[in-house]
Length: 230
Image 1 (cartoon, rainbow, N blue to C red):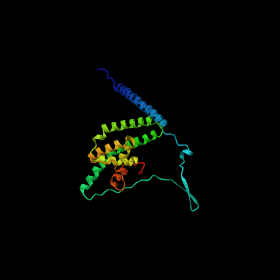
Image 2 (cartoon, rainbow, N blue to C red; image 1 turned 30 degrees about the vertical axis):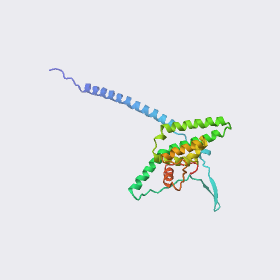
Image 3 (cartoon, helix red, strand yellow; image 1 turned 45 degrees about the vertical axis):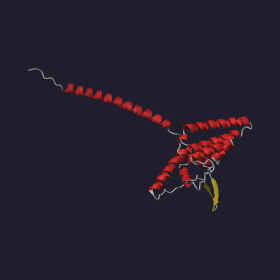
Image 4 (cartoon, one colour; image 1 turned 135 degrees about the vertical axis):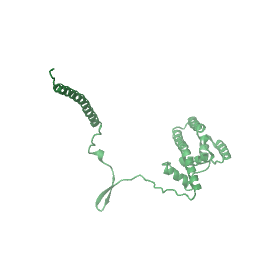
């Protein structure tokens, strides 16, 4: 009968070696993860904002008022308009208001551009008494306005054009007719007014915030102010 061989030590050694191999393999991953966490933690700690320094940086300037023998600080807060939700009597009124809102939003950027260009032109004209130089400045401004007109403003509807005329007066404090008269002369202003009349516009129309309460409310709700109404 052949000699019996005890395989238990061999199996145990094999299992032991396998276990050591597996543990060794996972220890490498664990080591890498720990290294990664340490690196990330160090980088994160370096990117944290430093603690604020105690001193002038943590001080808020404020006015003081004496009240009952004590100095009470106070600050002026920016005015915050509070507007109640608009309630319409009919669905037609609601739709009309939404159309007006759309048209105002459509033209207000052009009115603001016109106001900015007008004020810039006034500043430029004030820098020189040379009539020739002033004409050059006016011509350059006219070219810029024409480029804007040819690309965008000419596509406005009649209603939008009427609102734009009002908002230009709101932005500049001067009617479109007076602007044309100042920059191009009385004859050109008359011609512009005649053409505008054909399309139902009046370049002499002024902006009255009391009469245009809906437009003014829309502008203020959208955060649009002007030098005249703020």
